[in-house]
Image (cartoon, rainbow, N blue to C red; front, top):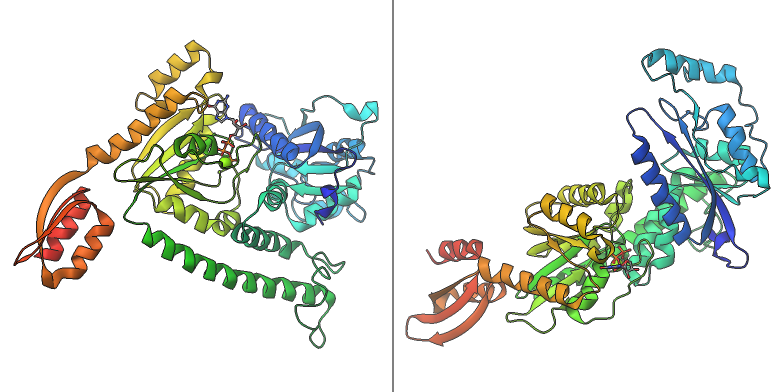
Length: 466
Ligand SMILES: Nc1nc2c(ncn2[C@@H]2O[C@H](COP(=O)(O)OP(=O)(O)OP(=O)(O)O)[C@@H](O)[C@H]2O)c(=O)[nH]1
Ligand SMILES: [Mg+2]
């Protein structure tokens, strides 16, 4: 279904639209559409127009009302009409526009306000794709494809397409395929999306099954096969993670394009991919801080966050996020030059707390300050007195960030000396993974260890030795 814009000859174009529901400000709507535009560009499409309709809620059948749908179809050369769909049947479902307005009597009177930008349709500019800034049902998708005559995608579809292009590792490829299948499964119809692509290798058609059921069954089978492969990969990863536990780890987390990989490069001297594209990074990389610190500190780069990312998709990147959760310090990285950075930070924080990251200590890094005016920088410094302001392009700033990371570990660790009896050999083994060992010596009662560690580890040790 989404394969066709992989061909790069001739620029394909898209028209974007949103439904601005009650309670969504103009600013939020515009910034969300702007972001969708960047996603669409990352996908390789050119945006020829955007349009917004204010409605109490999206139209059940077509998202947009009839008039606006016609206008949308003007960009694609479609009829703007959905066959077999009448106002009467719409009424029956209680979805008539007027009914909605009655129900929401105080709604500004702005039931269907035209907020279109440049009407390029008149210039004969034709869009090859229609893209909706939200999630839609299969029925809505089918109706819109019928009315516009072109392929229709929603925000999730766009993000999935970008993910599948940027995925490189075996793990990321599997995760993306699962996410795509989960997304496609409800959209499958008798006409057979996802039907024969696997060339029948996934099992013969069972007795009495329609091709529709077969398609769904194949998708389910494929998903479970992929999930079990992923389980194996994750087992290996958590083995590796526990082997690395003796190291101190910080994790760069934040909205896509905030500059996480750029900081990772500078902090670790590694060559991770940096691109002015959304979701450039889909694989977690872990490298040690350079110049090497004592004890060595590991830095991990993670997949970026974005607004309206469906939960399924977050779940399929769980292992990538597990890497972040293994960190003892999270560096929330923000593009301070993006006017929407506050809400981007909020999204990052809420996703991380959903997956259990809220207990991990964190620091706020406001990046890209080279793009700010002196006044804007000063204002932000007042607003975020505890944040570290950096430009990934400035080596002094990166050095300051490195110092801040090291200071964090220094301040929070204390130096202790304890004797561990020989019959508690296991405790000693575990301590070695939880603390930085400075010295070990042996006497008749046990091993005398001098180490630096965090208060929680000390409490744990006390319990184990009592
Ligand atoms: N001007 C400026 N540009 C920056 C800075 N840091 C990063 N960039 C640019 O911002 C873009 C995104 O940077 P990345 O480091 O790839 O961002 P990321 O957070 O890893 O993004 P994803 O992997 O997509 O989540 C690239 O074009 C970088 O060159 C900075 O401090 N100043
Ligand atoms: Mg990155």
